[in-house]
Structure formats: structure tokens, C-alpha cells
Image (cartoon, rainbow, N blue to C red; front, side, top):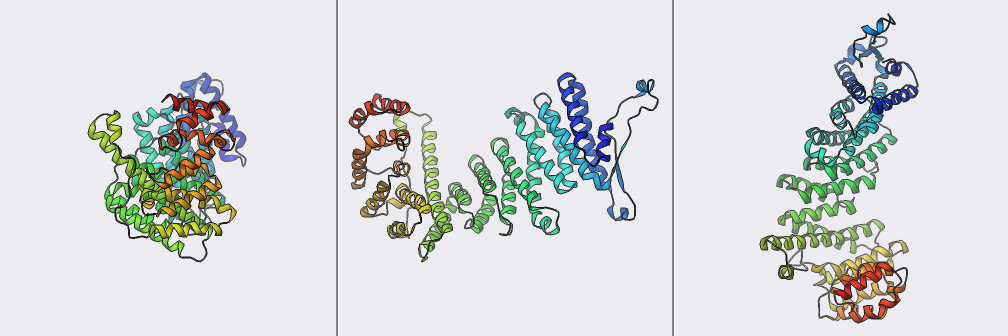
Length: 517
């Protein structure tokens, strides 16, 4: 109690905090019941701090000299101790109002340490303490808000998979923490303008939000509306506020997980689509994958999504100069088309498998191997592809890999490839073969018989020995061997010839497995 009182009196509370941490560490090892009582006392003290702060009328306090709040943390019978020391008492702790935020943060730091050492044995106490931490987040200054949010993240991260299922507190407070995070982001502009938040604190909010989303993505129950609210608040920030790419990537993955693994009401899908269509131009890498998933969920949305992305691609190619951000948009659009095709193909394969009720060779033979996003095309994809091919001469060195991926995607995306003239397909393959971009070449699947399939066969027939032996290519080449073999690009006799020369153990094993099959 004296150490806790010291927190309100000393300008530097670090020594008091460290001493309390040592006491808690000792109790955790030697007196688990006492450890539990101490932690619960600190948790109650946080709640008491919130109650007193929230009940203050700041207007009436303006004339007082030094307003304060009174906190009582520890309670026990001290009569036996007074036999030795008549003055022994557990005193109330008076905290000056201007130090109340720092005091609450100090209490959080003590509980943070208790959680670090005791979450494995006293998990329920800490999941229950999320309620008090969120109350402090609501009431205190920015530094304490962020400390509270960080504490909530650490408690949620430490919960076992079974706790998320069996302990209702965990899921409930996880959603409240996400809601509190969205509310904080909604106030960022106001806080920055009024000087309540610094740029460094905004960076801390960025990092903590990202870490929290990673935990919720793995464990939490679906919360579509909260993910949408958070994304809406972050995308609505002025352009002067720089967004962290890692945060957008994590938030995009979180929302994709929500869309992929749960049923989303149509009304929410419509709102999300409107939000995506308003902002995807600014963040294509992170938002186009969400649009692709929405195209899978709702057939009515699919044609609209494809139309918007295609129109944007056409507009980029009309420009006299393709800027760096345009390259990013081009690659994001084509990746989106590829993702949508894969999702639709997977969906159709699963429907057939579910209808048959079992999986065997006859069912596998029935599964489609490719699909098209759209049936009717009102875009001249051959001309667009030729324009993209011609951009090779305008590429800077750091944009070269983007151009090569574009060439590969034009051949990978089924509905585009079907509109390409044979000559265009030959040119796209020639560019990839000239630069020996193996990861992009190996991703291409082609119909047989066709002249472009023959071109790929000839390329691998000429290069396979070199690809097996070169340190730069052998790992990628060997990892794609099953697909290349099934596609008919690599023949058994070529594998037999190459086998004695392969030094890489995993590569040798891959070849032997294929030959055994």
C-alpha cells in the first residue's frame, strides 16, 4: 500500500513500480493465493480510479486549488499488526487530479507485469480485467489510452484457443476492444488538431491496432460491422495523415478472413462495396483483394467489380506517361482478376465434391481445372495486352519485375488469355523466357494442343538441364516440377537424364517421386 501511495507522490515512479513488480513475482512463485488477491486489488483500483474521474464535474473544480481523487487499493484486517505497531493502517491514497492519468498508467504497468508472469496460471483474472482496462481507455489521456489498448492486446494474445471458446469474457471484450480502437481512430483528426495526440502517439496507435488485428484474425468471432467501421475510419483520414502500409495490409487480411469464413448480410456487403469503390484507387494493393472476395460472395457485384477494374486499366493505358503509382494499380487489378478466377474455380470444385459426397479418382476427373470470370467481353483484351507489352521499353529498372509479372498474369488469367491472339501469347511468353523469370513462367497453365504450349515445351527442353544445375533457379524449378510435369512441359526422359546431375537433395527427391508416379 505504501508503494502504491508512493506512485502518487513521487515524480519518478519507476522505482516504486519495479518494487511492486518484484513483490508480485515473489508471490506468483511462492504464494499464488496472495498473488491473486494482489492482482484483483490492482484491478479494482483501476476501476475505482475510473469511477472517481468520471464522476468529477470539472466545471465546479476550476476554483479549487488542488482537486484530487481518493483511491483505496488494499483492504484487510490490521488489528493483529497494530499489537506491534499502533500506527499501522492501510491508508487511503490521495491522487492529485493532474497526476491521475499517470497514476492509472502506473497501475496498468504493474498489472501488465503481473499478466506477463501469471497469465498461464491465473488466466481468468486477466481476461476479466479487460473491462477495467477499457474503462480507463475511455477516461484518461492519450498516453494512458495507448497503454490500456496495449494491455488489452497482450491479454487477448495470451489466451489459448480453448479460452476463446469456453470463456465468454474473452470474445466479448475482444469485440469491445476492437470497437474502442475504431472509436479512437474516428477521433484522430480532432485529437491531432487540438494537440491531444502527437505524431509519435499516432504511430503507437498504428502499431497496436495492427497487432490487435493479427490476434483477432486468428482467434476472434466474426465482427463484420466493426471491421467495416475501422476500415471506414482509417480510409476517411485526410491524405496529410500518412497511413502505415503494414496496418492496411493487416486490416485487409482481417476483412478478407471475415468475408471468406462467415456469412455477411447483404446490407453490410453493399456498404462495404461502396467504401471499396470510393477508396481502392488510393490503396489498390490492399483493397482490390477485398473487391475480389466480394465478387465471389455476390454474383450481382461481380460484373460491377470487373467493369470498374477494367475501366481503370483502360484509362491508365491511355496516359502518355505511366507513373509508378499506375504500375502498382495495374498489377493490383490483374492480381485481383486472377484471385477472383481462383476463388470461383475453388467454389465450383467444392460444389461438385459436396454434391458427390465423396472424393475418388472419378470425382477428381469431374472437377473443372479453369473457369472464366465473365462470359461476355466488351473490351478488346488483345489490344490492351499489346499496349502492356509495348510498355516494356518505358519501364525503369525498378519497375521491370512488375512488367514481367503483368506479362505472366495476362497468360494466367483464363478469361483474358482466351481473347488473346496466338501471336500476342507468343510475344508474352518470349518476354518471360528472355528474362528467364522462372516463377512467373511456372505459374502459367496452357491448353493442349496449341502452338504456345509447344513453345513452352521447347523452352523447357532447351533449358531444363541448366535450370536443374543453376543455384539461382534450381529451388524454384524443383518446387514447380509436379505442375510442369502434369502440364506436359517436362517429360519423363528429361527427368531421367537430369537425375544423376542434381546436387540438391530436395530436388532429387522431387524428381524420384515424379518418376515413381
